[in-house]
Length: 168
Length: 149
Image (cartoon, rainbow over all chains, first blue to last red; front, side):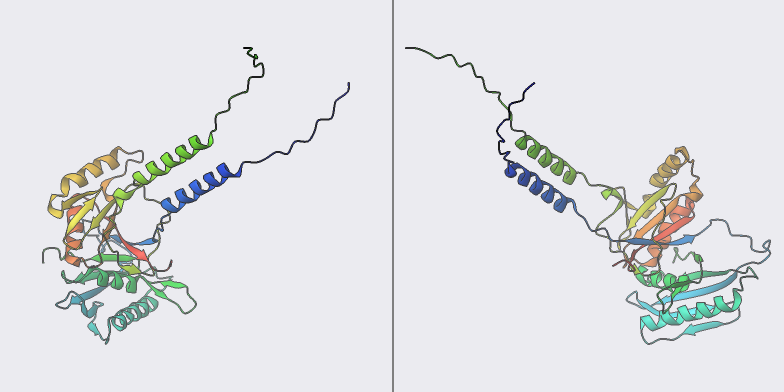
């Protein structure tokens, strides 16, 4: 059977429609692109019924942190009560104040939180009701962990409670 | 006058390009029209910034996201509520959680509080107290994670 050789026709690709589609896709993805800001959580477990610590083998060591607000709703002073003494933290700026709180909690956890003893530390916040929420979050951050020089985070306290001041 | 019979009939091919164009246009239009999970996020709320907050690794079995603005208004599922009038909404969510596949009890429902950074903490505590009235006790304070810039 003989095949007659056919002439090679130039196949012309129509680029117009392809460019159209590319632009369509480009416009679509530009319009639907959305930068989502990463968000994180602080866990606060607040049981309605008081936890019976007397029945526990090792009740958690409780540290009360009092956050006092100024007239503008900004933080003015921080007091800590470890059931032995009440200490007022000093700091010229807000950042210094929270750094003091962070160091205090770090020292307490390092001293009393021997892994073999199993004693945990619990922090209860007593917060002025007019204190702006961002200062509360900063305080929670200060007791939650410590940022180390190498960029790692040292966890401090995970059990965080808020004293009910909602009726103030 | 003689007419020549045209025997070579050309096959009419429809150009699909404009149809595909229009399809994409419509898809883009409807995708922009639908707000994906926008009901869960009140854009006007500025969250406080934090470095140490842990990004949620896995979604809780059942969660309720409550947005709280500085005036004490709670935005839930796109609707605004006063804290004092929130009970029916919370009860509805508790019922939904109980009927869900995992049958989540009220105490295990993750209440995610997205409060504006200038909200008085007392208002946040009133919201927590309202949730506690409905036997909810697992709270998460959502903040803007500054570790991811």
